[in-house]
Length: 355
Image (cartoon, rainbow, N blue to C red; front, side, top):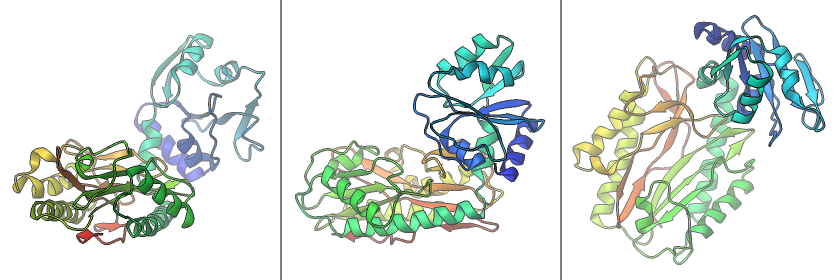
């Protein structure tokens, strides 16, 4: 177990009035235990009590040694719920936001005296501020993603399909040593670029199309994420104008990042560039999201986020403009908050790219 991380979570539990929680998401269990366990339909739960009591409940398929944690194993012929119920105390119990409800319901039946409440915040809040080891891994992941994206942009040809461009990125991500994609790549052409989360299809690339490539790979379980927009053969004056606005909005959003400031101010800085140019209605998503062991995690970099930036927080800055039936542009980078500003994790250029 990572004792310093456990201590931070317990401190958060006490501050939030939670005596006990169940940590059940694979990334959060890994964050605290160093074990990456994908349980599938089987039960996985790390029990934490603010008095220091810790126990890991897992199927024998996944865990071979308890190490410095009380390991309570079960096999496929055993019901782990009574085992868990024997450790949990009556009263309020924090439940991880991703735990399947059927486990919660059965635990309530086995131990009627518990009151389940949402209990992800103590771990989420601890995970928001990355330590030096985590930042190094995310920096490496972003550099690898830079190279995979650079190679992919260099292989774009007229007539290829969106699905073929997706496959091209996945090939390059593997070639640079990626553990796998951190999310399904978004690769879209022309009018499809006006859909921020377009589902890649068989649309073929033609001259004058915008090309959005929103991609990320995993490196030792940590996620990367970046978006670059290019144009095939040529770009119209409006395409150039929209691209320059998104690039400048990205720069303004990153330049605003510093500790002690609410994240809504970073969204405001990026959004103002686009709104002042008259395209505000065409930028209709948040400026960014937290990232780490999950591709989307706290903090939220949005107009309503009152989270105060602290060193170690990592999130995206990804303003976009989407013109239905015409084209779209998005420029995205990851930043990590430092003691006096931020570090941009991506190094791939942001100049207008015509391929």
